Image (cartoon, rainbow, N blue to C red; front, side):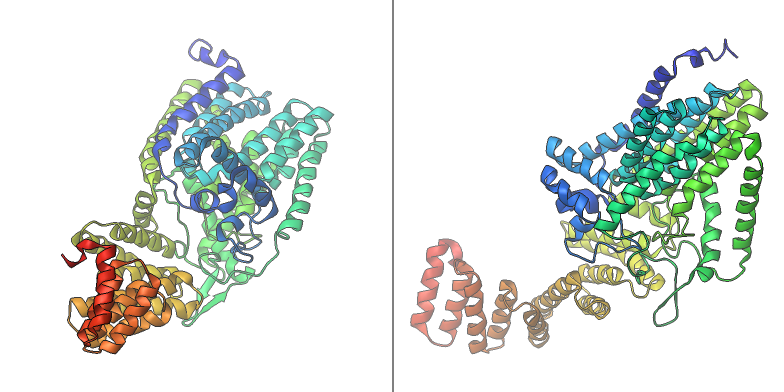
Length: 625
């Protein structure tokens, strides 16, 4: 083995650098990708982040989403709110230094992922220092971690920086704790934990995982290692309480996309209590094991109704409880023997617990990014069993096969993250029962319809969006954004009455829905124009335009169209009235003067008519051509 695998003789630092370079290279395709998913919330459309250095105080003074929504209350859309200022701070600094662009964001994401790869190897190398296969297992676990496709969401989505930073803090704190037990190491562990927990709160599990890891390595007085992470968690909770409140503060969200544990009763949603939701929670847990071992197919979306909401003593839930309880009891029984595979299971289970929905509703059934930190334990089990149960050469062959398979699946998955369009239209095929996935795909097709250069192209894209949006509202009958997007599909298909119906339903759900009000106005205006110009139905045209006028009485185009419609209807006084209002909106517009002048001529007021027509000529001599 020493002759065949002599590369393992290289120093741990040298090998960690090689692994870091490999991690960076694997994700270089993402450098050309766009902003996707929540990148708008934390970067592109977050006013605090976009302010650069000047926005950093606000990033630390408010909920993470406040800079996007811009008003009190809307930030806490999920139970307990979100306070994760560290990654936004780095986004703001990067934007100030290098400009805000997806390239910069992706470059730093894969850089920090490479740093994490190196630190993970160093940490595992220290953790396994008493193990027979120290170098082999540390290398195999890190290699599989680097190429595991389930991590593509964290690395290829810039917003995933919070997960990378959180794990950097967790692994860094463990690494310094494993190397030394001194005041200096405690200070470093505290600093790493502060960095991690202000990136994402689930790093609090290191209060348990660090002393557990030192116990496995027979470090004297291992329980003292809990003090630095405990101090960091305590400090974070105090700051968080002052800024946005406690973890369990705020009301339970009543929107299905932020609270999946609700059941449709035919006219509204009923929120499930814990004893009603626990079967669903436990039935989802095995999905994490599947994703860890066989990460295909992948999707960013596990929202309702990707998983069925179960109730009572459902067999799937019971089997999951028996599986997880049995493995956990076995791992705890093995604690005195300090078996590394049992450490792997406890790491996986404890790291996953904050995102499991058992204690706190995290707003979604499941997510691939939730596996980022827990996967280290799961991969440790796999590699330990391989090297302990299989001879060295076959173990390395099996490691190579796993790594190659994961790498190929990663390269297949990465292009889906190129843009919202590629991501949404791909993932809806995987998450076909997700209301959010269908809404996102429909919205992506509508974006293409809105940007189309020809009417035929616009109709083609709208026809693709419509089925997804109809499925979204079927799955979630009070999904206001899906009704809005469905209205957009009808709008692009020139089925204005149907579009109006969807927008009006949006406003029944939320009378203050700004996008609903805006799009309803546009649908009224466009329907009036269509009925007048295409159908020659002036009565219907005026009815629609009157509704548009009541919504926005100062819109120039609505006033102009009403003037034209009344003029063609021989109602000259009304035409003059609306053309005057249009001119008030655009006092330097030649067409506005021309319309008003022509209307005066129609009623025989030649002097007034000529006056306005001459003004039109002065503003635009070509207008009479």
